[in-house]
Image (cartoon, rainbow, N blue to C red; front, side, top):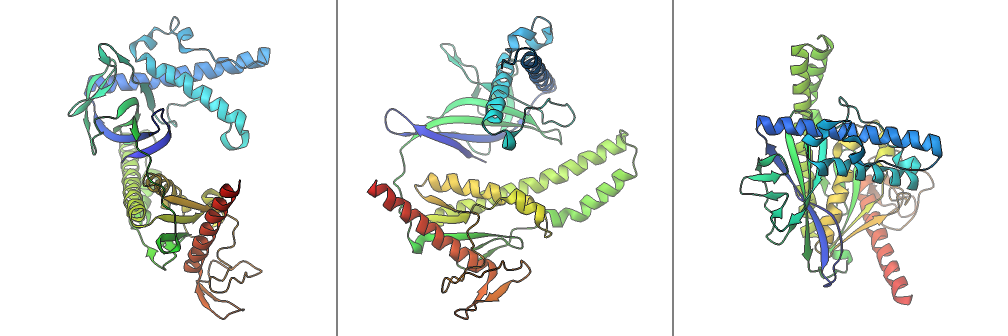
Length: 395
């Protein structure tokens, strides 16, 4: 699925956008062996640089990360893989430390990578020389440094004017290889669309229906985990009776991973299709900035993160932005549920999640908990937007 990574302003006034296309790779046995070597070398370089950085800091109190070139004389196997993948590990570690210094509580200190628990991946940048680019796509594959042309399946092709910037090759737990290709392209800035009440939609996250909108419509996607719960339980029961490390154990683990991967693919497909439908139909969407991680810790009605509402919000954001539309974020502490959408009366106490409807003591209106909250989120989002526009005009 395509995904917008961001944008910036070009010299000619057009916006420079970044789009990622994900493709499935089908490497030959020799290419797969090279991928595995690259994964291992990237993990080795990361751990060596992090270890030396910690030692250097403890001895001198200064921050310094050695470059991959320092380790090649003592580790000749590093020369067998693409040097760009090793350089990107240095860049990622530097970026991880910058994020840690900026917000230590949120990001945490960079950790050592482990073969069993960490995701196998590497990144390589494309460089264009007079002889041609180092990475490019063909009709049915991707040309990579040292690996040559790797067979690939494209669900969507890039436009002719898009420039390939870098690729990230990753291996799933089920043994499949995926490649995320980052493209840079210039696009004319879309004409901003001013939201009005008639073309604005309010969304409220729902434990039971994924979301409920301001029109009262309930989204009921397939319950992927519930449908597969029985299969997951049977697989877990089988694993508990097997000898860890045995052939049957490894085969069952792979079935377990394949089932989880299937559920994740179904969830991702629904999120992209539903966000595209809403982005095309409405000029603005209002949502509340709910902390889904914190909400998951206190809820007893299933796993909030399984529903993918955070990813859904991000898909809405970039798909609306590409059309000049707005995703309006309302403060997470806005009392959307206990505010009457008919008269504006605010209940002094929280309304229990078990109560699906409640009656306003001021005007007597019978309100559906989540539909009422969606209407309030829409009204608050529009109010915030117009207040901000007035502030900008007066400044």
